[in-house]
Length: 440
Image (cartoon, rainbow, N blue to C red; front, side):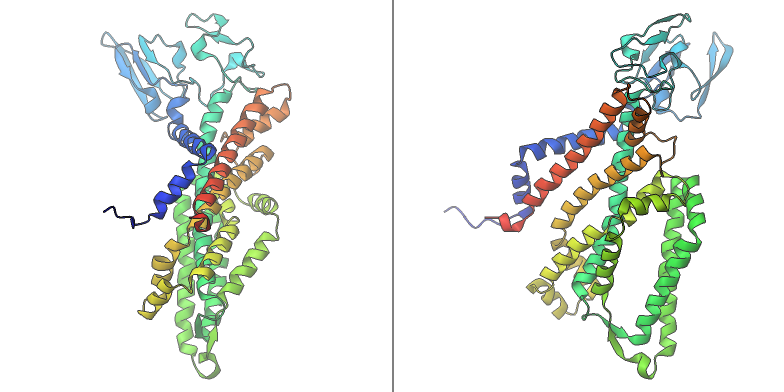
């Protein structure tokens, strides 16, 4: 007899529902394509060959570091030093060579195709003999150039990496903050968490002092660290976070010395009120205006922009998480965990949180699209993002300087539009697929 009571898998059900939306499924494949382009951007668009044989020596210039140099010999005699970052590879007599699909880097300038070379117009090329000729097909600028001869296609390919990285990093920060704060607000509410009055006051004061010193007094250290290197900036950020937690810990320990009379009485900690008022306060300030204000006082860095977008984008995730916790905190499995004496931390993050993340993932998907759009807007305005980093917004800004160069407006605009549409369509389909109310 066939068993009709098969175990139901919500993951399989959600994936089945998602696949029914053909447009979203196509968008998912397009997203994977964008990820592949971002990961392999240095090998898809590069002015150095992927493989070359020069005077009997096999080279892989595109896979080597920028500062690498090789000594070239011919018949045992030293010819010259080949320095990878400044070598004009097209002028060398290469016996065998494999060029990248787009043989240009986003920052390399073609002096013979300056002043906005059109994709379909005449383009020039200097051959090995030093003659200026019609450009060969493999070196043609397929999407045109800007005013100083930079290839637009190479800029779009490398801009894909920046845009996807901005979306993922900024929303990773926003998700971390929003999930934690929303979970605490929804689980404890205003009356469930209690502590001695002096401990409550000292915790708030320690949090204020920790944030003031960790990020207020150390803002120049953080700015210089991100300007030096990414790893140094991340290290200094972790140090600031450790300072905040350490300050709170010290003030909480200090409160043990003051627990007497009125100060030792238990009081409710209104976590829900704090989080809800913080969400309302942040939402009342125009996000783009807030980001522009912050980027105006710190050093220009793409990582600073990501952090700022993340720190200002957690409110929607927190509200979704809070709403889910308000729903599930009265369910049997949460009450069972509390009855068994599990700690609040274990109950929240091990038992309740996995059952509250479905709508949060949808909010994160929408947030990634919003973060990409914000970064593109900042780049278009020339704010926050360094000028040496090529982004879709900065390419779009070049088209504003010369409206006759339509390719600098159409192609970056299409890249931004398509990417944001992809994330929005995936988020819409995920919202329908993860909604348990629609399950029959």
